[in-house]
Amino acid sequence: METRVAVIGIIIEKPEAVDAVNAILHENASYILGRMGIPYREKGINIISIAIDAPQDVISQLSGKIGRIKGVSAKTAYSGVITKIEP
Image 1 (cartoon, rainbow, N blue to C red):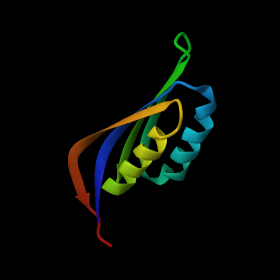
Image 2: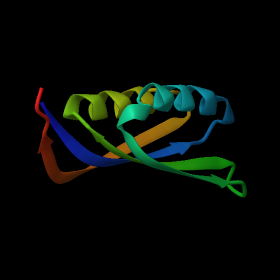
Image 3: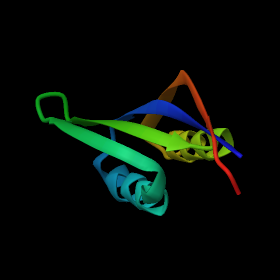
Image 4: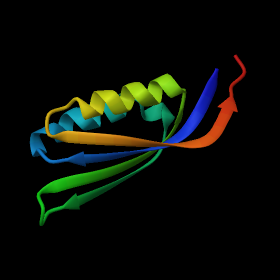
């Protein structure tokens, strides 16, 4: 198995979506290296940046689940760092 390092940028425009995003992130906490959240009160949005080291399919599924929540958008940037994990 291989893992990749990536950053997922999340923008939450609907406050009621915060709990759903946090639940998904909690489910994948073992892969998350760090998280930074910025409440942008003047615009009424929340900005979250997630650094993750996980298999490609986990990263894609996580970003996809978050992006399908109404009022939320997510984009992923992948690094070229790929690590083989011994079984």
